[in-house]
Amino acid sequence: MTNSKKKICFITGSRADYGLMKELMHLVSGDSNFELKIIVTGAHLSNLYGNTFKEIEDDGFKINEKLSIINNDDSASGIAKSIGDGVKRITKAIIKVKPDMLILLGDRYEILSAAISALICNIPVSHIHGGEVTPSCYDDSIRHSVTKMSHLHFVANNSFKKRVIQLGESPKSVFTVGGMGIDSIKKTKTLSKKQLENDLGIKFSKKNLLITFHPETLIKSNKLTQVNNLLSALGRLKNTSLLFTMPNADIDSSKIIDRIKKFVRSNNNSTFIKSLGQIRYFSYIKYADGVVGNSSSGLLEVPAFKKGTINIGDRQKGRPQAISVINCKAIEKDITLAIKKLYSPRFQESLKNVVSPYGAPGASLKVFNIIKKIDLNNITIKNFNDINQK
Image (cartoon, rainbow, N blue to C red; front, side, top):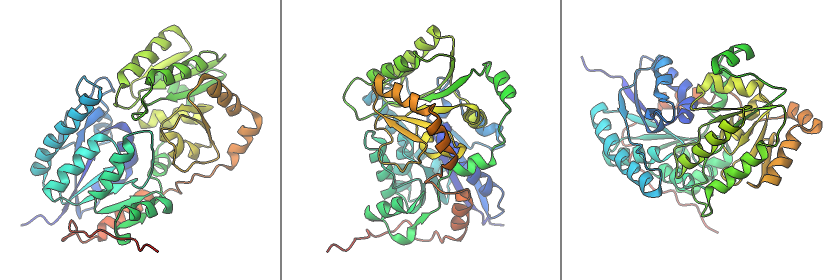
């Protein structure tokens, strides 16, 4: 008897995209019409980044393929080599798994590798969180490139939908579903403060901040200057616990990690964690006063907790922001002023009225229901959608 189930394959390269896709993966896994396949690559398989593939397995999922592509070289040439290795190894895995559709999220370089592999193997791609802009990082170009190699587009709001259509995609293939992170927050049962302290081996102080700082991959200046300015500002804080998480596996990320570790060794109010995992991450946000750095999570997820975000530099420039986001330059004086604003009574009062620009819970179910109805026959054949010029 022929298996008529559609094989839906998720490719995940980091804790970030997995956390956003997890609820959708559960929906696919629980439907008798689908067969869930999972390919894991990128930072998930790096000991430096906490071997986060274990979180996927702990959530009850079976990983079909583990593809190591990260090497010990985080220079531009090293990252380019990882992209090439990703294309080679993901192509081999796709041929083995034989999916009817790939689901990709975001703009990481391993996602670019997956999209290239799918294009050449004639596998339909559903892309989540396209149409967004981050001009200071090569992620921006990767995101738009993946859009052009994809066939279904699930975007967070209508401005992103317009941008995907502007790239030549058919309006019929672009769906506004909201942000995926809201679903993850809704479904996650957070830990108590005591449980979190015991789990992490920390103690909350009078004030508490969560810090995640990634490289701005297209800036030509010394990336360490930015992190040094951040650490100088944080080093002046009193009665404040600082919890640092890992930066992305990007150009010069190892230098940022080394600098943060040195800071933590010299400041006993600081802790460095390879990977919090989603439950501990959301739990810490719940009890922290706010987050500091340049992670997309500060814009996409943190507003749902009605907590403040200090967004440093231009990495997230161009993304819609809630009123809970405080933007500042990556210089010590500006970061210090932003922290002062975060703790001001007026700003704290304003957090009660925060509304996320990425919608309400339900994005995962919307994506799932659309995928269930899509006819995959000849979907990989698409025309460029010209916009009428006046």
